[in-house]
Image (cartoon, rainbow, N blue to C red; front, side):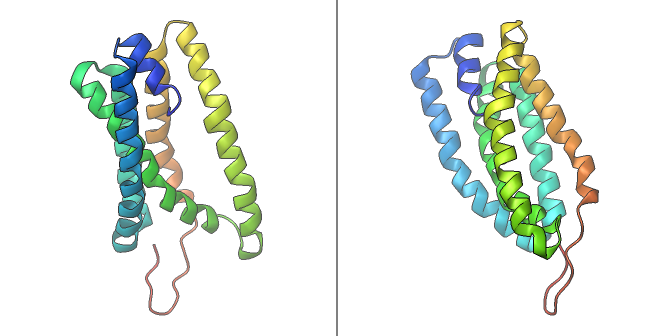
Length: 169
């Protein structure tokens, strides 16, 4: 999504490159605040609740990019990036919980390159193919739908074991 949104806004919606660069910059800078906020909220309210809300909002914003025009499109475009960034603390926590302690380093070593392969390789190529066929909006709608649908996988996450003085996430 990050690499295709500027092209979408310029080519499909006629925004100037200068205004798109500004919007993309604002969305990326606010992502840093989203990371810290999501981490703090996860500590306070628990992993599942915070990730559920963030994934829902992220999916809805991504679908709105494909369905809307004008101001709503720009708000959704600027909001989607920080929402996705807010998933990072929860993603890392969930990733370490999926494997036994002895294999956690292997889980991280395999998951991060796979995420980069999909996010920076396969997804942009798929978006490009869909755009070339004249359905650029459908790529955002599909990505947002997959993001919301992935909430169904959340219950499969192994719950953290409570240690003295803490509560399970």
